[in-house]
Length: 282
Ligand code: KIV
Image (cartoon, rainbow, N blue to C red; front, side, top):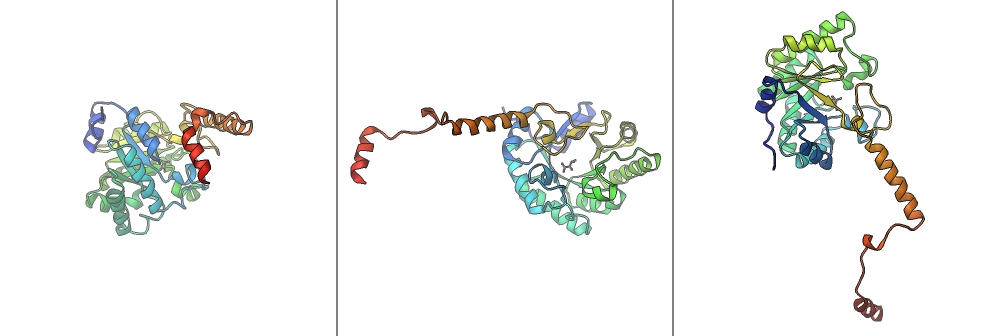
């Protein structure tokens, strides 16, 4: 039976009922189908696809058109999951108007339920503009990959008291700007707990920031051994699909090479009569 469509209301109900929200990245139709079937609440079509799918070193080259294409495929595979479009680099930083236009594309062209953008207090006017345009918006604090150069690499954010204070202040400002959810990436667990205790009407999600939020996000490719370059510490491997696929590919190479593939069940035959007739015709 198809499950009921997840909405803002069903997400907040989970928070009220103290049931953790499950959230994963996803960029394609078959994976979206499986994630919905498994009961995942939310999908992030992340600009991490620049690395996991397109093989770039980082997320900056990802364009809005690429995000729309992948989000449309995900929506077809997961019609009842709460889908979040991740605003790529320079699609919201230049101005509030740019942010609203691109957030609108995610909603109108790709059927998203919400958008996410990175950044703290300096992004509050973008968030306010998007929310005032009627689009649910999610903030993203801590390690924000689009600013990885300014942050000095992929590292934990908020280990020092000064930096932790800035993250807590940004969280408050983003909530006041209207974000219904904030994702914290690679922030120490006790900082996340402090933020959760202070949040009033905002869902607090964790990626490598401990168990004390309202739910967890993981990068799908890290969970299944599908990203060959590195495995971040925060990612748990729930199954090594990469290993299974590599084994299958090697077997294919050897079976084609030694002619044990294909077998008769893998191809099609023309009836004898038709074949004889054909030979007289050519
Ligand atoms: O693009 C993405 O997948 C993200 C996660 C790293 C949070 O923004």
